[in-house]
Image (cartoon, rainbow, N blue to C red; front, side, top):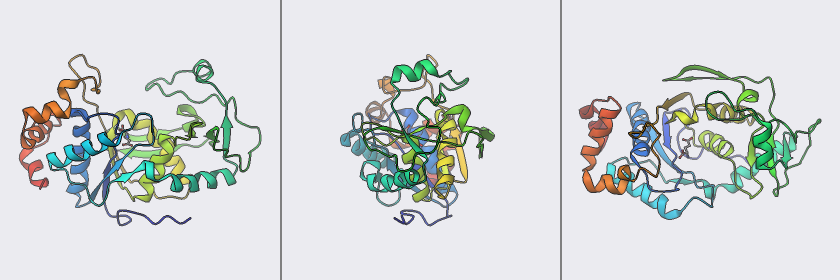
Length: 291
Ligand code: GLU
């Protein structure tokens, strides 16, 4: 199934904000949204909103609507229609079948406890490469049963290279970070890496700006894009996560920094100015980019 590049014009600058609608946004989310918005707009590019609601247990439509309302309140208007991952199963299935036909998928029956016991924690970010317990000795063609967890058989020698505006040149061996990663879960949920790789490519995203907790996710995403012959973003900026007074990354638990509280205390302009100070950006310049 040829999937037309659905949003941006290929190769013209395009960014995206890709929140998971699992709660109300907080200061950290809008910080990431603003930096992504500015990065796209400063290049005269388009900026898209993608709602990452593939986890049906944790995602709720009301949070997605609230995210849109909060972005509009701030003046961060996205281009086109928002893209909902929950509506893109046919697209993901098409690429899953392609990998299956090429013998690159295999079912994994490892329990969560077995996975934890068999893998050494990765040095820096908690990613644990899969130990390969269920990896077959020879490729299994058309093995993509939709009722089992499916892993991608990666090339153990592959190295993924990319440049990050903040972290510099990155050279990552997926075998050392994720190993054979999951593309679809037993409960039918698409894996984050799989859906993001396909969506960024089909939306012709050129500039990815997101939290640096996702830095090492870039390698499996680019690996998949290359494997599937899809386009890849050209610029990555993995921004430091905002932390609370205890030095922990902001989360939904930091309710005093949630958008409902922020909206009751600040005007959109004051909040943008506040974020600019955090990001060491010139507020007057930033405000000219926001209609
Ligand atoms: N949905 C992810 C999140 O809310 C972001 C994914 C991405 O930017 O690639 O953390």
